[in-house]
Length: 290
Image (cartoon, rainbow, N blue to C red; front, side, top):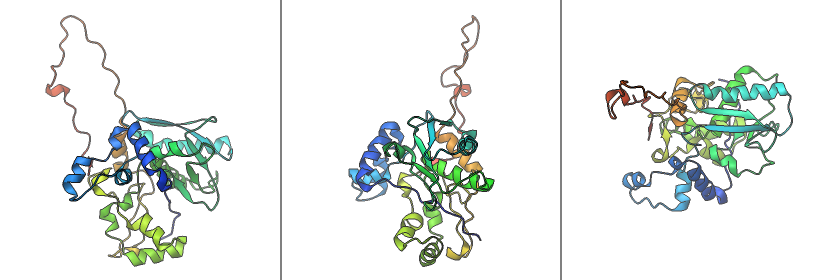
């Protein structure tokens, strides 16, 4: 199995975590951790600000998201258009739009060589200085393979939309052999044991997740992990493009707005009674907060 370049999500300095959590909750109240549930399923849980800051999600809100995008190194119009095309691939099933802007863009893309592929998570980008990038696409050019645009640009855009790494779900972390993973990422990427524990071996807390009911090993947000670091020798295939579960899930996080119903005020026109079967929405998916 090849060793594709992986993403290292950017985190704000620890001193800003509480500020970032407050901002995320102000932008989208659903980002707040479910304290009543946490206290019920985690005996001894103390809801301090620092603890809740770690558990706060960073989604933009159910009314959808429209973010402006700028480039810090003035690439060609052709390259800008290509990157935006792949960012907007998430809009296939969701109310998501990325538009170009040269003045105060919210998403700021750099292509700094040797700095890796990364993005800050969701609403955290609001706290990044306006002259600094919120995403890096290491050395991307028009010569970069289309498959890499699908794998990397769409993955990093997922982070900008608030999605964490799927391979850090407990179900997938449990498959990884700790010492083999430390050796593998140290050899191929120069990561320290601490980096590997943070980026690969520490599962996201199930109690705080807004996620699919089970982990999706083919999600675009999941690393490709070789069998040489798993306990059973079988690889975690990872995602090379947005898959059906990704599209289903984002449609719930950022649902498309339904057009307002036409007025039916003409005399004699029947209208559905409140609470009737005709008025009840059919559940779109079994995706849940777990």
